[in-house]
Length: 220
Image 1 (cartoon, rainbow, N blue to C red):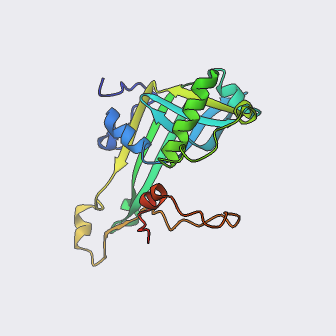
Image 2: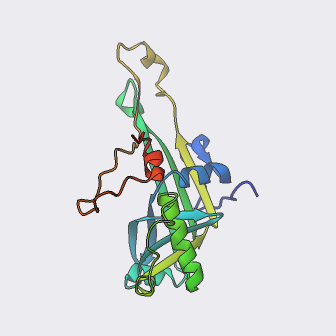
């Protein structure tokens, strides 16, 4: 199916024209970020945890300490809601009421489970590293047995998901367009800056090409 089927928990009601259930749109928002917030309830107390994540098909993954209470409970099949949002700019209208933000966001629902198979866990963590920086796994040391034991990888098949996106100029009340007030947008972007070497980096180790390319740098 090209779209997720919404129910009462995922259907957008406010500004429905901005809501989209299309997989391609939803995955585009998910795949252009590294950080998410995972919402869940433990012992009648709501929690929202910021963490890093990655996606393979209809499955979202994140990881954490095997000693974490949240991770332990998540691994038992806890219902969860994972959200991702991008702030794309300020929308400055001719009235305070119509000021807004341009943004892209996703809410995804499912049940979390632990990846217990050793090979599957190793593969998932390698995919995560490649998601963060393509080309990196070929150079770094693989996770050892102690690190794998201390880490729990959580997977959540997406049962439902919706995207909500606002773009474009302000939308003012018709009479306000005659006001002598500047109106428009202030675009905002997340930009990678020049890499900063570790102070303990051994002499003679050059910046890898894949990092230079990722950051848009030109190597001498």
